[in-house]
Length: 65
Image (cartoon, rainbow, N blue to C red; front, side, top):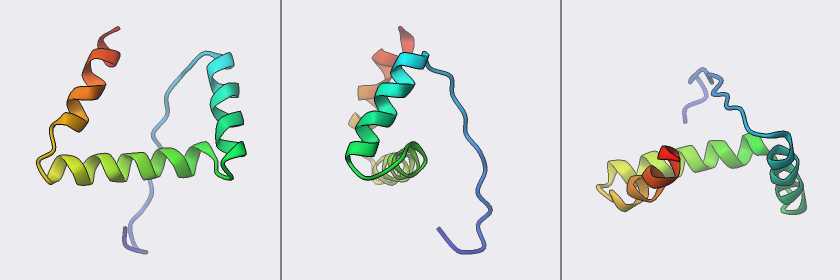
C-alpha cells in the first residue's frame, strides 16, 4: 500500500459473542481486528492474484451457510 492510498471502510455484522471472542483472541496475540483483517485481505488478494485458487475455495462453503 502506498502512503497516498486512501483507506476505505469494510464492515460486517457478527453476533456479539463471536465479536467478543474474536477480540479476546486478537488481544491475546497483541493485535486488533482492524490490523488482522487488513492483513488477511492483503494476503488473500496476493494469493488470488498469484493463481492460488484454493484460498478462495476454502471460503466458499462457509459463505453459503
